[in-house]
Image (tube, rainbow, N blue to C red; front, side, top):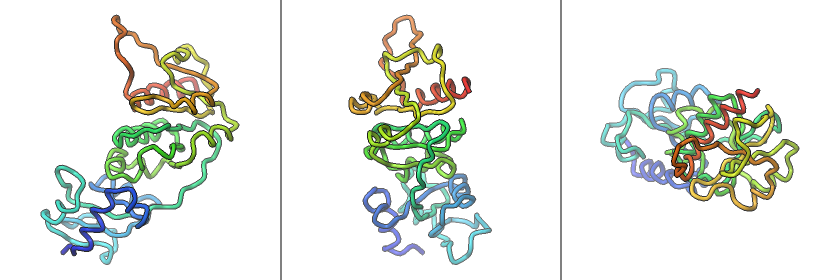
Length: 242
């Protein structure tokens, strides 16, 4: 049975300040939780409505009711399991290969999808600006579908990172060079911007190479691509060149 303190703790973890305070986050659903259990993430406790995850020690599992799970779930339709994990220490960024840098990406679904894309294309490092949505936001964790375990994500002052890197820095802009005609390297930093405003003026000044995805529609009236969709196209081109 869930205690009031447990309910209070888990629901508080929907907010970033409490995740930071407690150094905990939660995940829901068998696939995501199993991926986390198979990784280096440390399980704090597992709440389930039926006997799944037979390899988890019994002292780390609580069997709860569907009604109790609904009280702690962040989903509209609760799953059958929720797990608390400890937030690990950030690993440093290794400056090699391709690195995706996110400048103020705010939507949890976009960040989760971008991490899945990085995982798909073999990119293991993502640098986020301090304003980018928290990777341990429950909606981000859910959207990664387990890729959170295979992509190293670091939050830092993006301008300082770009100033300090020896890698070539590529920014995505509407007026950049056509990516389909660009010679792309197999190492570099690829900067993706905010959903509404694109790359900030501060980061734009530090970006050496400007690339863009051309529009092919007859009317040319589409304002911009969703940042996760744009990331998919750009990573595909970089990997195609490689």
